[in-house]
Length: 372
Image (cartoon, rainbow, N blue to C red; front, top):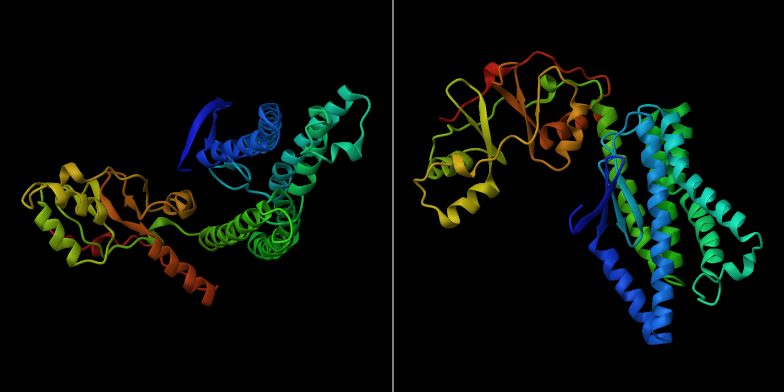
């Protein structure tokens, strides 16, 4: 996630802080300082920082449980609205998602229970005034962790409760239908939260927007994964593609792009091997400071991801969410075609109209049109 920086690592997962969280803490401290002086600012920052430590532990409840099922989390990012752990893939089975989703709130309940054991005496009504610095930090943290556990269990997908709902539904209805139902329920809750935010805490509006957009995005990703889960790269790749020689000039690249609707041009040598990818953005940047007769090779990038024709598309779906295309290569690294967002969108559209449609698995490398 952009605008974030790493503050540490645990069990192979980078802990990152988004710049907006720093701005949020500055705002909290400054507002408390203006209202009640430096001691109030310190107390407020200490309380909020401790809550975010609890949120980090909450996220590692998810991360370590996912790791038990072979799912890797490269990073977790702390934001003003909470934490977001990225995972290299979704759980294979509904029961796995059920365990992963409940692990985070369970951590908050364990923290609350441990603090209660330390306190021995607890005044719940006083602890509910979590913005009151006269109440002890420990008591407020108990209430905050109970709130975090209960709030995250609201069935508003993709929050933890929404994932629990999807996991339970998926056991009977399948992943695709369960995701659509959970996403719809999540968006309804988001609308209610946003409406409540207009009459109370404005932060609820931002949380509602996040939930609504995240539910829509994840539902789309799940539908794509479910629709293409039995597809191989050879079935979805574009083979009528334009390529260009590595020694070609910028002028030739301009002509190739003008003659093609592609966002990227593969650089293919005389042996048919892909030596790089040149995007339209790379070309425009090169033309700003370079003569048109200069070679394109220094401005091309290595293929960020490759796939073999018989590999399942699911292995690169995550890559295609951030990249324009993925190169399909054979065992000798010769280019066979490109997997693009457009080609996947077309397959999904056809499958939505005709779920029984079958696509040929035959590799069509002979149809590649090379612009040399």
